[in-house]
Image 1 (cartoon, rainbow, N blue to C red):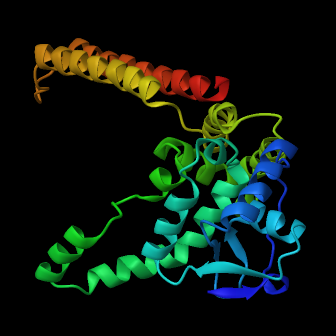
Image 2: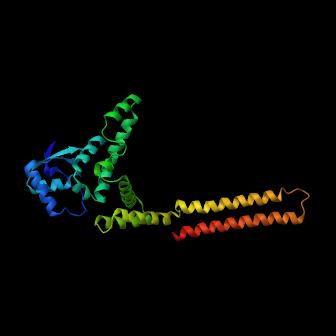
Length: 268
């Protein structure tokens, strides 16, 4: 669909600028071959993907440009896949753009899921055979790993939604990521570390080690109490003292284990 370029809304872009060599090559391609992949826009003609193509066309003095309205999830994924075939385009994809594209895809993805739920078994089988997209197509369409998408989602969503210390940290990290100072991979390690401190949680390995010690101790308590045998009404003072001492030692050890776990949490 052709629309006036003046009606296309450009997104707020804080990513690094495209280098002159690529921009010039893109303009040369537009002059010689035209626009190969339409801009991907929402219903208000706000650009979801294709900002650089639109800028190149604007620089050439184009008054109209071909757009693809993302009215379904399938349409959006197909358009993204065509636009991100080029390795250079994939390499220039920033975390900010990944987050914006993902955010734009969420309503369409939910509509797609709801549509699938209304299908009967036969319709679902037919749809699965006919559909060109998989269960989680966005990473492959953009040429990124699923872990990269997950990391971007965690950091940017926390920056927008969390009002606590973890949110403050993510907002600071987002600024550094957007300027190219650090990568998402670098930030995600600190994100998990800050998250553990903010929630007071520990990693799985530490929890396993502590719980292992607790289980070993509980088994020794069971063994000791089994050796002592049940207390009868005729129990002597010495037998009662032995029982109380065993319970005291057990309780003290459990308190020490709890203190060790608390110290482990605070140190991480």
